[in-house]
Amino acid sequence: MNEGGDSEAARIARARLPDGLRPETLAVRTALAPSQHGENSEGLFLTSTYVQPDAQTSARRFERMEDFTYARTSNPTVRSLEQRLAAMEGAEGCVATATGMSAILLMIMGLLKAGDHVVCSRSVFGSTVSLFAKEFSKFGVETSFVSQTEIAEWRAALRPSTRLLFAETPTNPLTDVCDIRALADLAHDAGALLTVDNTFCSPVLQRPLALGADLVMHAGTKYLDGQGRVMAGALCGPNRLIVDVFGPTLRTAGMTLAPFNAWVVLKGLETLRLRMKAQSDAALQVAHWLERHPAVSRVYYPALASHPQHELAMAQQSGQGGAVLSFDVKAGSPERARAAAFHVIDSTRVLSIATNLGDTKSIITHPATTSHGRLTEAQRQASGIGQGLVRLAVGLEHVDDITDDLQRGLGSLS
Image (cartoon, rainbow, N blue to C red; front, side, top):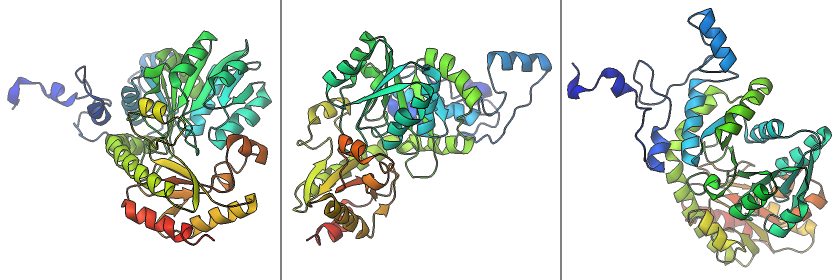
């Protein structure tokens, strides 16, 4: 019996959402319509190929790349994730990839060619530096690395061949914050695009497209998943780039996100706002505690008033600092600084010693020998990555247990 006058199809097709929904609702409800079974939790489609009704339909779908033809090209679970993340970022479209680094690879392959030039912050993630400076220089794409925060350096680095500006904000691990709107204006005046790595903030704290950026990149492995389970990446932006540029490149090169990983991240987005708020609040408490500690010389965290870009960060990041902070231990030579940092890390009994971030479990690491270990010492120094630097990604443990664990090492430094 049909109660309420709605047809069964209308009740099931919850993907046809009304306009004007708030971000919290979009993070839970945006997806493809349920199957004929009416599942409330989005389905996980584990298939490499799709049966076509007839040869003519198959030919049309392959020609236009519409609907579902082959898993390297599209998958219903992946499509649901793409729609949800695009809605949260305020983007027309999204393309999901196997990892965050493969999202950058897809972007470069889709946008650039030999002879093109990129301007990039020198403070970005170490693998991003290597990808631009080492791997793509082999193919004639040149990159200039500049200060994250000095607009004048970005402007001075521009060339007639500049096609892309790339920034990560806040940066990993020093949490430097760039002025997204100023960089967007600079890029557009030069006929270039601006891409912002929004991994640290996620769309619940920061929406770069609303500030003028052309593309948003995510390492979905981090906060979008939120529990350290799977690898994922994404690019969000206008369909003229997502569909017309990156779509063909993805179909050819195959940086495809696995359906299971997409499903995990899709469910992670439903609790993203709650996690980011709780972890940001906890990180601020830990940062204040570290600032007062006699064994710590400096704390890097955007929500602290001592942070050089504090006011800008609060304006861009919804008044939150995010969940990642770093600190320098007090020491003398680089050798002593490294030994002191190792001592603090090795003395922990609760925190996880790992190189990931974005997990509900707090993670501590030594950037100079892990995330930035493949850089030269000169590159690390230029990025401000010293041997005494420790990065902490704050999870959901009780704050006092986090600080007690840090005290085990900090309190015994001589």
